Length: 228
Length: 92
Image 1 (cartoon, helix red, strand yellow):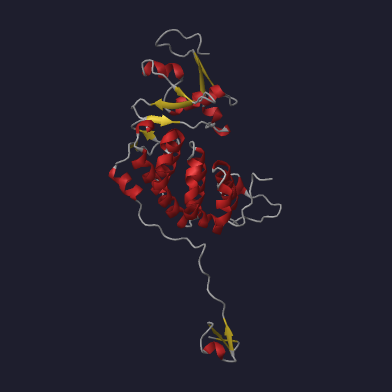
Image 2: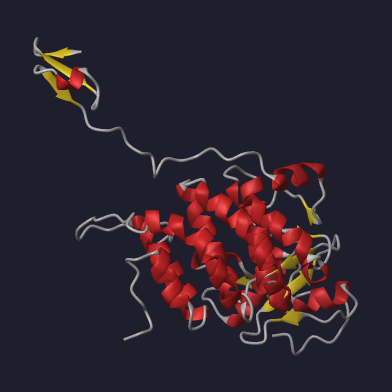
């Protein structure tokens, strides 16, 4: 295409680029922050089949799930990975039931959570990999809850930092520089940069003595919140 | 307020709205979310069932609703400031 009659815009490393009257355009965006579509989740399939022990009531304004059985009696190896799988969801009702289900199970799981950790890594990684801001926020809050949910859970997560932290590294600087203006997303805890910083600090606090060096390896700009 | 109730099917004498948040209001909020007036009614309906509470705060942890499904509550405060006025405090 000719600009102002004479200049030719062209891509780099082509024959045209060597011509005197051409202007070389920069490379296109790599798309590290671009949202990626997620495939239909297993959670959705199970939900639509009605295989979860929850009473599906859509009328209440409340933010609770009515469980048909006691959470303490659930098979965590089966259900917890399924609920984590639903973290990729962005639409109601799937999103609500997955998020609330995870929080309920983590809050009442105690010692049953730690053995399930290896099965949770792939769903967590998938959720973060969608790079959808809302999904990342939910997943970060779930990760914080997960680490604090039981003994040795934080330590059990350390070997899997390689899977989880790369995305956190990409989004770590996604912060609004609003000067002295008010950032309203802060109050709702939806500011991704702040949430990531918070999550990494929780990881370090609960991850035992190897946590910091492993975090630093994956997120080089992270500074310890404990060594000082 | 619950100490003077002795009859098994005692109807509350009066009702008022909560003004400020207290631990007691928090628990009433939880009972009312599950569809009961208060602890007394819950025990009446569930025939003296024990109530699970969080050890640190004393907040109600788990309630069985009238349709036998379960509601689970957080160990942290759930009744936000803008919901305090919805809580009904019954006097027996």
